[in-house]
Amino acid sequence: MSKADNAEAMFLKGFNCSQSVACAFAEEFGLDKAMACRVAAAFGGGIGHLGEACGSVTGAVIVIGLKYGITEAGPGKSNAEAYKKVQQLVEQFKARNGTHLCKELLGFDIDSKEQLKAALKQGIPQKVCPKTVRDATEIVEGLI
Image 1 (cartoon, rainbow, N blue to C red):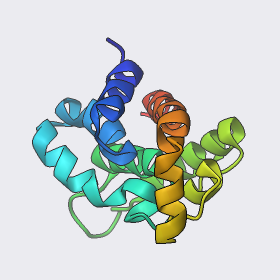
Image 2: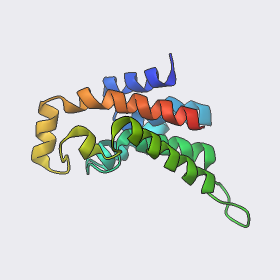
Image 3: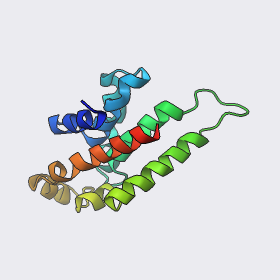
């Protein structure tokens, strides 16, 4: 099963977009899936259901941090490579989806309880998010 297949399957089981993408790569970086699910949990719904950066994107950002994030500060140490990869991720995600913002992808401002309820009632996340999960997973896999 590909990482994109794995991430999409996790989403369809009930994990949020961020968890689904981050967990598809967790073991590759020595992080168990349970810990990856906890780390990514609050990023779903565009960061805590605020409708901001798509959870699929933030899950991929976590993966980039696991690969390129520095672990020691000091002269010659920099997160510049991680920042560059995040910029490439967002650029490619926007090229595929038109935006990287959850509320724009869903067509609902899910920061509003009423709009969140309407989006859920209409099954919007189940219609939109499998593609974003798959896209972010494929993109980040190409970047790392």
